[in-house]
Length: 238
Image (cartoon, rainbow, N blue to C red; front, side, top):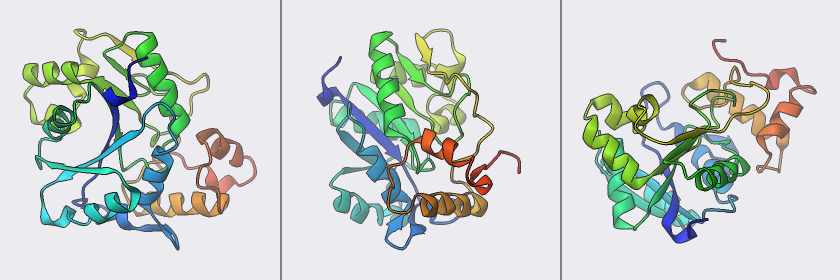
């Protein structure tokens, strides 16, 4: 497998949410903000040790500096509207060849899932590996691996605002690239574990409370917990 020096997690986060302002700084427990939960879980990945928090140069995003210092991870600030350029600039600066793209809207991301995607990416000699090409995991466990040269090439071909904002949009739709999708045996894609609005936040708070001191529960632990507490079944379009 490729050296750990060439691979890194790029955690995308910004403060400008209209539906839930400052959502990453809301507290899911007395001592834990949403962004803290996300970073602590990401640090449990075994196959990647570098984490970059990628945000904008806007003043409202200054507060991410303290977060990265607390967790001893790197902060990268780049283009406000072009998310893809932000990631590319960061990868070039730190000589990263393989990008593990995670958004801070997925605070209960599972590190084991990330490790599985990394293994598959190199085993299949893939240019793009994810668990979102064909949905089977709960929304909020999104993992994407993109080779830097693949991302650069895709952004040169498709210069649409949607591709700049959603980063991998063209790669996912195109047949130009070698792609692999990590699929779960049972389809749980009707579950909603992401953070976009107040209802999402209240659900995630409930999940953290259920597991009490264990913030490193796996995604399968939460699926199993649904049997004991029906309020933990959070379906889309509720």
